Amino acid sequence: MFRNFANQLTQGVSGTNADAKKVLSPALRPDIYSLIDSTKTWAVGGTGGGQAGDGVSYGALLAVVQKHFPETKKPGFESFGQAEGEVAVIVGGITNMILELSNWEGMASGMAMRTWVDALVQAHTRAAGQTRKDAVARGITRGLNQFTDATLLTKDLTTRIQIISCLKTVSARIYGAGTDEARQSEAMWSSKFI
Image (cartoon, rainbow, N blue to C red; front, side, top):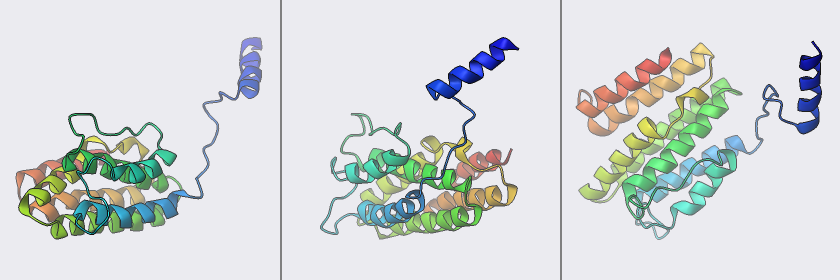
């Protein structure tokens, strides 16, 4: 009994209480929508500003993601200057931001995910040249499958279903329904219902 009381006192003094409630950052939702707009333009490229794969321009996008998820890292040296690796990190970071929002605002996060999925598909569609389209498609798929932390997703069933349903459609809309990529993505996101 005394040990439990002493632990509570030391946690209060040191500020290491793991059960402390998190608070929604007021900048999270505006940052999400700002990143969605700028990422679509960045992934398409050729609009006068930076573009995915130039090795520099993703830094501004990554800085906003790191404001909410400081552990998000730049792509490794093997991905430096490659559109696929840069797109993957940014896609995973923004998706994680939306999943974090789902814990606080279910309907808003569902709408944000729908907007994000539409922006990803538009970025792929509008990318110039088949090589760039392929790199953007692989980056999007890799970002959603490898860099997205599904544990951030809310436990609220309605919001969970809405967000996962959106994510399941990305590969089908990019690669076409029935392709291997679409089936793998659908199976992976379907397993997240559990």
